[in-house]
Length: 400
Picture 1 (cartoon, rainbow, N blue to C red):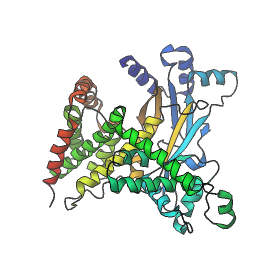
Picture 2: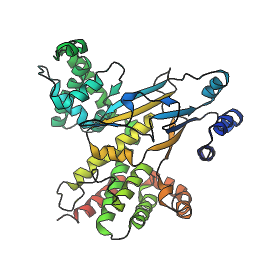
Picture 3: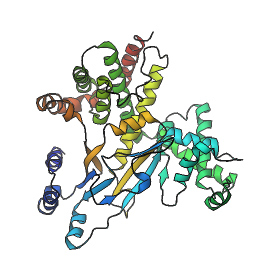
Picture 4: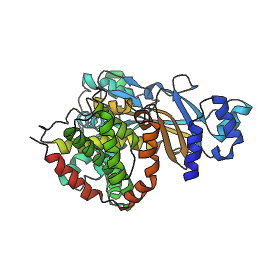
């Protein structure tokens, strides 16, 4: 894997398209990779519904620097040599929790009309060319369904999603009326099936790595808030303190999340809405930080899934997020992906503004490169539960 990382870094340093093209042809070290450049001047344009856009009440954001891609892999390069490459990209719109909750309020067993302020949202999803899913809602609630009150609400929300999926689009286009092509018994069966999958996922030990990602985001945010409450030093010093916590306690570098925390330290107003509840007078501060960590997890999980080939006929997978939460949108906007490499179904991103932009080259080497083995040892031994209790108690000491 270390050699792979070296090859990935070598490839990231190439910027000339012809040089990249030739590298895939001539350098066997790169030929198992998929390499994607993102921006505004590349030939592959994402579907308009997945492009970065602010609507009246919500945002759609992909994770990229622009809405156009240039993709390189060995098969595509060979296709370009003999003509034109027509590789298919699987694009999906992920709905955030708030977007899903609006479906629950609209698509009941006895529906009325779609509220005027939700029509733009609903009609976007009803387009024939739009593919969407509600996996962020599924992931976040998978761990909560052991609570009876929450489980009932989750099942009702899934029912609403299944009703919406069975909506008679032609009747709606004709007279604005909501009707379903499936009856309530069919909706019930489909919903119970999804609910049971969530239960199985919650009990599956292989899911522990997914939960640990969310836990790591939560711990990082807790520490960032503690640093900000306790220190009057500048953003750079606060960031270095956060990096020390990553090296000494957390054991994993979450680059996007750390860059977002840097903007929080820097008070540059780029993430004001995401951190708006971070106040010592907020009695629900710990609960709110926990919710914020799920927002970051959903973005990270979208990135994770883009490393997978989910459809056999599509070489690439791209997710965009539909969110009614401006704070969550900020987290994508401040740290877009400029280019990325997929190796063995794992995605390695290079951000438009990442840790290398915050630290000097010397400090980056000292804090990041020279601590790789240390972090690997820590993440295998660390007890996140104990660390969580320590950080939560420290947060409580600041509350007034």
